[in-house]
Length: 181
Image (cartoon, rainbow, N blue to C red; front, side, top):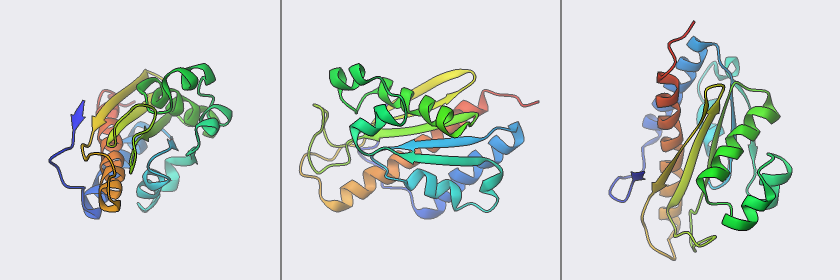
């Protein structure tokens, strides 16, 4: 679990650097990437597509902000959503798998969580799950970017930026396990 309580949100250059590393590693491994986002609302896809040459790797994205879209578009198990809500590691995992399937990509990345200002599905503000799915399986990570209830807008933006960074970092670790061809 990542605890981002004491870390400032990464600056744009740091996020850009992480995105560049992810795309370079995927390009080296001849892999394509797709993204499924909830709490980050397209910011992960934006970070990746801001990198020149991203089109060689990036296939597309789905922003499934509403819970019912996670099931309808990405194929997340509706019973799971009813039982645990949208903020859960298995939901993030299924979203990543759905992104892979929908966009016909080698890798699917996903974000789901609570940016605030209020708790959701019994989870406090700052609870985030990120996931990466590929041929080798799925990995997810829980992050707690603590802020407290009634989070002001700057905390919401901080949680979103930290979530993008956490997803890119998890993806780099996932890709690091592969040696290439």
